[in-house]
Amino acid sequence: MTDEALFVNDIIDATREGIIKSYSCIECNEAGVSVQALCGNCGSSKLEIKEINNVGKIVTYTIQTVAPDPFVNEVPYAWVIVELDEKIRITGWIPFISSKEELKIGQKVKLVKSYKPGMVFEKISE
Ligand SMILES: [Zn+2]
Image 1 (cartoon, helix red, strand yellow):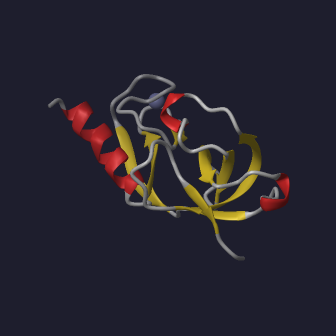
Image 2 (cartoon, helix red, strand yellow; image 1 turned 180 degrees about the vertical axis):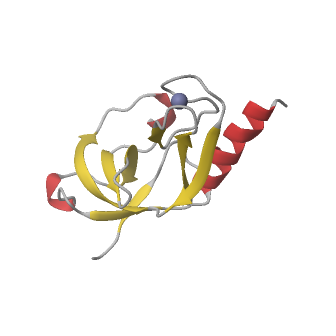
Image 3 (cartoon, protein in one colour; image 1 turned 135 degrees about the horizontal axis):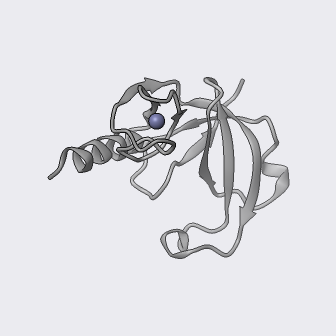
């Protein structure tokens, strides 16, 4: 396996353990959370990776009742944009949400251990 593939696997493994890793590019300072081995801005492979807090708040969401293939057995769920405590926004989803009464904007959430696709969050209390 190439270094890039090992690197990507490492981030996917971390996500499954409920760990979020962020990157910042040493060349251009681009920062984010993503499963990638190269900077999304300049293509550099000189990325600094660190583990960050897996807690954030819901910025916006949509409830999915019809889903693409990997999620077909998961409906209904909420597709969410979460702003992490470190001010980085990421997308993920929360299982078993079927109505707007069940999820508020600003709800605190954290990434949980999961072998399902994508980043799975759950509601936590303040
Ligand atoms: Zn860069």
